[in-house]
Image (cartoon, rainbow over all chains, first blue to last red; front, side, top):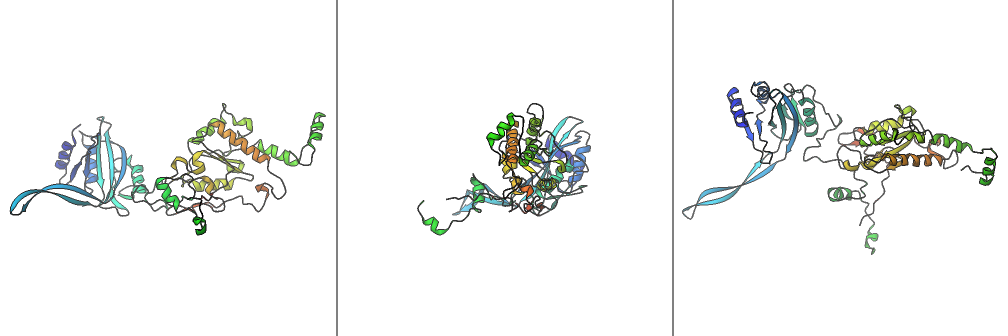
Length: 217
Length: 207
C-alpha cells in the first residue's frame, strides 16, 4: 500500500481545496493518520472508498476522542538585541489549543487486503452537539459506532440515517465519555473507600456531634 | 418443627406409622421444595446459573429446576449478573409482576453492589436499592455450589416462615408491600437513585 504522504498528494490532486494533514503518532505503533477537513470529508472518504488502487471498502472501527483545552509549552530560540549585541535567547512560548472532539475511522481494504488507513475529523469546539459529517452512507458499518460517539461524546453526525442514543436511555442528557463528565453521586455506602471513591464517600458520612468529638477515643 | 406437639410423642407415633404434622409445616415443606426460578440472566453469573441447572450440579435435586419464562409463574428471582441502570427498571417491573410469595437471590458481586463495575456511570450499585433481597451470594461469579448453598439457605428461610401471628410471613401480611416503585429514566441518573423504603445502607462511623 502507498504511504500516507502519497495518499495525501493524490487526494489533493483529485480534489482541489481539500485540506489534508498528517497527524503523527509518536508511539511504538507508528500509526500515523490523515486529518481531513470537515467540508471535504465526505468526498475524501468516498474517494478513499472508490479509488481503484486503495479500495478501502471496510471500516472496521470508529471511535471518539475528547480533547480538553490545553496549553503547549515550546522552547524557541529567538535572536534578540541585548545591550547592543545580537544574542540567541531561548524563550518558552505558551500556545493555547482550544478543546475539540475527534472521530477516528480505521479503514481496510477487503479487495486488496491492505490497511489500515486511519482518518480523523475534528469538531470546531466542544459545545453540545458539535457537528461532523457522517460517513455512514459510505461505510454502513459506521452506523452504530457513530451513534455510540453521539451518545457518549455528544458529536452530531450530519447525514446519519438514524442518529439516536444507542447505549444510554433517550432521556439521558450527559455524555459520559467526555473528560469533564460528572457522574451522579450514589456513594452512600462504601465500606472500603480509597482515592477518588473516598473523596466522594466523605460527603455521605454522618457528621458526629461536637461533644463526642472532644471525647478521647 | 411444629409447635404444640411433644417431640417424644411425635417420634413414638411415627414408629407406629402415624405421621403428625401441622398445617404450617406441610405448607412450608411443599413451598420450599418447589421453588420455581424466573428464567433470565444478565451477565456471566447466568452461565454459572445455567451450569447449576444442568446435569452436573442439578438444581432439580432441590426442586428448583422449573425455570419459568413468565414472572407470573415464578417464585424466585435470581439476579444473575450486572444490573445496568438501563436494565434496572425492567428488573423491578419483573419483580412486581411476580406473584406472592416471592424471593430474590442476589447472585455475585455485581448484583450485590455493582462489583468490579461499581464506579461505572452505567451500573446500578446493587439491586437491593430497589427490591428486597433474601439471600446474597458473593463471588465473581459464584460457583454453582455457592448458588446451591444460597438456594438451600432460602429453603431454610422459607421453612421458618410463620403462617400466623405477629411475625407471620410478609406475603401473608396485607400491610407489607409486594410491589415497589419502578425507577424512571432521568436526565442524569435513575430517579430516584434508590428506594429509601427498601435500601438501608449501614451508617458508617468514620474518624
